[in-house]
Amino acid sequence: MTTRWPDLAALELFVAVAREGSLSAGARAVGMAQPNASRAMARLEREMGIPLLDRRTSGAQLTGTGAKLLMEAAAVMDATRALLLSAVRLGEVKRGQLSVGASRTVAEYLMPGWLTTLKVNAADLAINLVVDNSRHVFDEINHGSIDVGFVETPNVPTGLRRMVVASDRLAVVVAPKHPWAQRKIPLAAADLASAALVVREPGSGTRTALDAALREYTQLKPAMELGSNAAVCLAVAAGAGAAVLSEFAVRAQVERGELVEVPVTGVALTRRIRAVWKGAPTLAGPAGELVNVARAGYHPGR
Image (cartoon, rainbow, N blue to C red; front, side):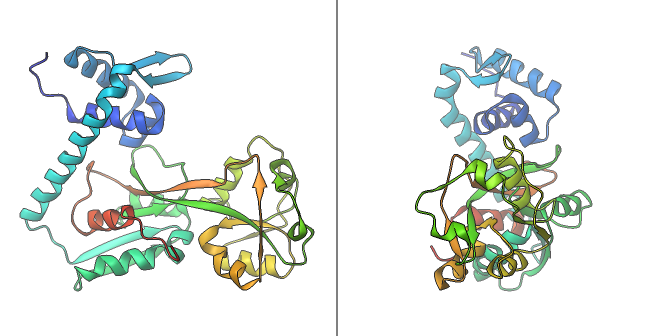
């Protein structure tokens, strides 16, 4: 048995590899370069005296012994984050201001509830919310303009920290008089790809998720590209075509009968919402507390 403490950065990488599904994806998740990640994992395996990853040409997967240690490793990282957060609190970090960035879907349907919950125990906290698409949220983080961002896209730039905090489902919606509204069987993914859809603008998390879901198909040129969920909903209700939007964005219109949700088969229309930040592995102060609120599971209408 080794007598050396494991390197926490390597242990964080190990947990990230298990979560993300490959060594390269795990490295990106913790902001570590691929060569450094490979060396860190090899060093961790030597120090612990057991193989943790099964390296193949198709990628790296946890070994049996690695899988058995995963829960303990994750617990160590959670405890380390709690330790760092407590240290920051005891050090009386300035808690008066919080700058948050959010992609439009998160800002419109999730952020109000999250911020309201946060303010219950931080009534004097001054909050600045920047609302833009995911691409611009990343820019604001890199420029140091915001403390933490919340996005739907899985394409987080290398060098930024990220953590899954919630999930979302994309829904296909049409106007009540659209031919798809009367379908008796689910729509095929190929039919969805071959339709001229009303879509969000490039760079938005919704558009990125849709393009990723239909990447195996040749997509028809969009009927319209619009910069907000509300604009897309209005266009669809007016008969401009079908759209794929967050269920948060269309729930009210579907319940009122203004839009009809069309079931789809053969394509995964789910996505994960991530908190994204730059710097230390653990967010402290109000930014960390907001992430905890998001992870606690607030969803409108649920």
